[in-house]
Image (cartoon, rainbow, N blue to C red):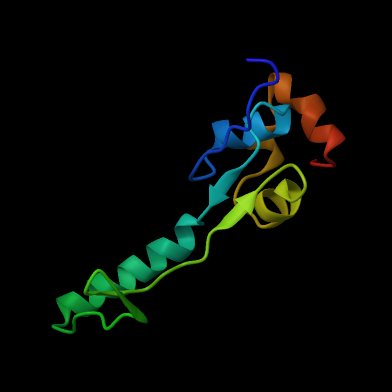
Length: 107
């Protein structure tokens, strides 16, 4: 198709970040695994101590803790992904993506 319709993704994996830098993907969703992982560890530790998690809200009749994801685009990729410590330029700005990283101020 020409023009290519906007392509979106989920989970902000390295390949998606590279596609956003290259301009072949419009956005992805960042849900930092550290934040989600820490909450899961707390819930697991509570279960081991006989204390089921209470949750901050209820979703589908189940106690839940919801996290607000961040939409990542070329406009905020440096701030969210690189300045936020999710990935380093060394992990992402390889080969064909180096020039795009430089254009976006990612070092």
